[in-house]
Length: 238
Image 1 (cartoon, rainbow, N blue to C red):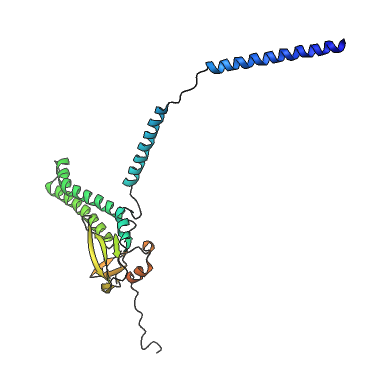
Image 2 (cartoon, rainbow, N blue to C red; image 1 turned 45 degrees about the horizontal axis):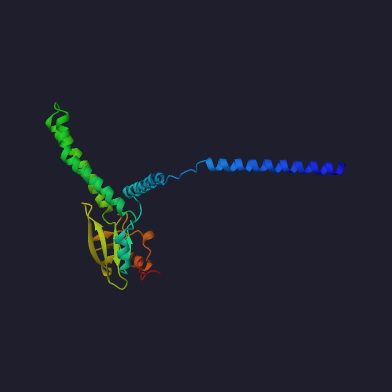
């Protein structure tokens, strides 16, 4: 009897547990069916992508407007390298051009507006003093512009040479900040006998400068930097 009662009790407990688990699972299924599925808004990703593209374009434009110390490797440089010629680009060519343009603009403003401002600001001042002040302003501005041009005039902004050729082409900068092409023969290269800074060689009574650290062709650099011939004296041992 006791054994039969124990078996009956175990069966009743198992039935209650199975019924409870079934009801709980059914309720979870109903809750899952009622809860709405979150919708993904794909339109919100479009403004983010547009903002990223706008930010990248602004950064690229800002980098182009910066004064870069180094050769600007543009499409022109790639075309020159495709021609099979050894091309040298001045590392600070773009910087020199921007500084010269700034100096020219300030010089033009000083020459055109300097006398006007001097004569209009001090009406009680003597005319001779006004003329002296205006002339001093014009002279100082023109002197600084001329000194800058003299200092950077030997700088070679671009050099093209095909191996085996007896001449090469260089691009120099005029006082109006425009590039001037010149053709130089290797036979005309001389040792520069001057104390002027930033001079590598002399050719046709003009000085030229090449940055040796950025001229990767050592054969070309050796031909552009002539060495002073050392001649032994006949009376050396006397």
